[in-house]
Length: 173
Image 1 (tube, rainbow, N blue to C red):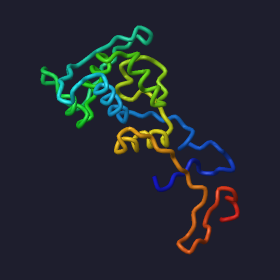
Image 2: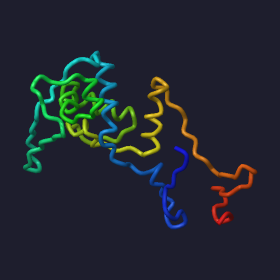
Image 3: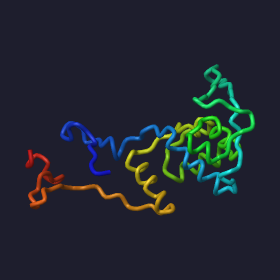
Image 4: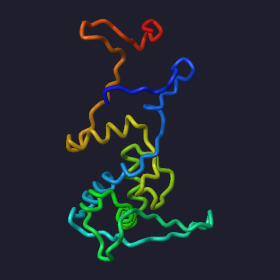
């Protein structure tokens, strides 16, 4: 990230929406469930079900029928193809197979806020600060090593003239 802006007016609200908010993560959760499957002995070529699923929620008296643009062929799909195409149904089945409590614990280890054990965790029904998610994704090319995030406290021109400084925000227009 080159720059981030946490709010429109820091003097009115010091809540930084980039570092302090908890944003829905959606399908960005799928690589982490994929990693958990690999950690638990799955092969990237192993098949996972892609069959349609319907779950009745007695509290809300609704049937949850997750779907996607992909049409099931009835024989499942390889795990690597499911992640490449970010397919919903295979990740729901994978989450069910791995176990809801195991997936929830894994996501919480990664600092994702997951309140309920539900198959919707596979589709990103969790939240995380955008900076934390960025830090997590930055660990992928580093083979899982997390790096400390650095936030700029000021910026300057090539001639070292300070344009903005966090300690004195009003001083620099």
